Length: 89
Image 1 (cartoon, rainbow, N blue to C red):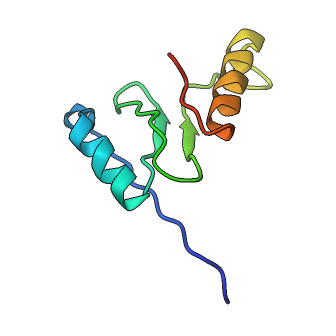
Image 2 (cartoon, rainbow, N blue to C red; image 1 turned 90 degrees about the vertical axis):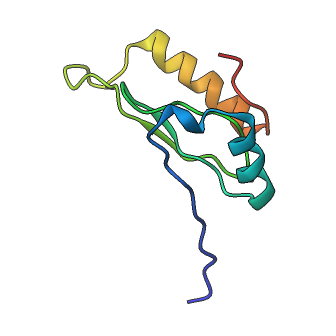
């Protein structure tokens, strides 16, 4: 229907945390999923004009799933990404 498709890759092994992989996704402008997960690598490098983040460590006991300090930290990361930068942590 005239909509552009966007794709991301989701990697699940630390072997992707190398400069060569980051160069490859940047070359093809296909971002990697930033997965906040206990097992999967968290790669925050920007490779395209959008970021796909999956926050998966929330606590269902909390109304917002994250305590205020963690929400503030995520808000700063989102601002970094929205401005074309990368989080420094």
